[in-house]
Image 1 (tube, rainbow, N blue to C red):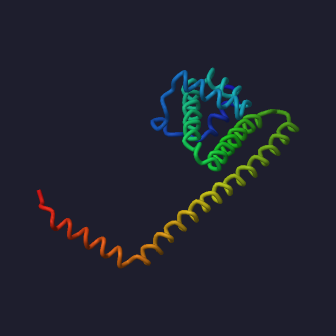
Image 2: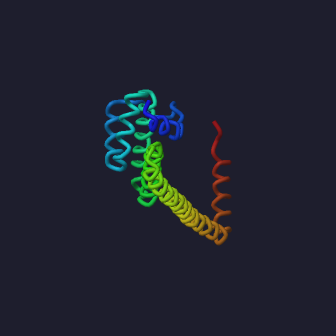
Image 3: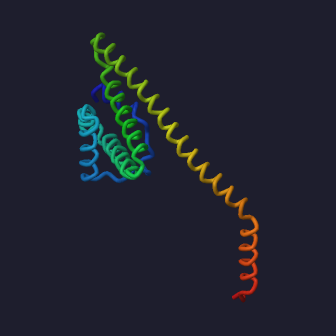
Length: 176
């Protein structure tokens, strides 16, 4: 196997194969189209993996397809969708750069290391953005819960009456 591919295959996170969608030609085409659109420099590495380790290639395709499905599910949450896509793109660009670190050219390696550092900074920034988004969502949810609590406290007597009448109705109904 090409040295960069060994490195790439060992760096990619292992997904639980049983949790991944089944490999099909249609899913392969969709996954490859997604890669071509977002990180085209990953395609030669996938092609090399396909030649040298078909099982690992199919797993990678299944994982990429799963990402496309997850992103499709996030279409209604534009901010989260965009962040998750940016994270996926940055992580996969990093995998491509890591594979390029195997070059014997010292100057090229230093250039790649600089690009990798930039991607690491970008990924940390994206992690922060994800946490900020989660905090915003939790603040919104907390506000809604507090509003509900305020309404419940303001309407105690009405709620007691409603509950009481409901309990009486249950007591009046014959049990089967």
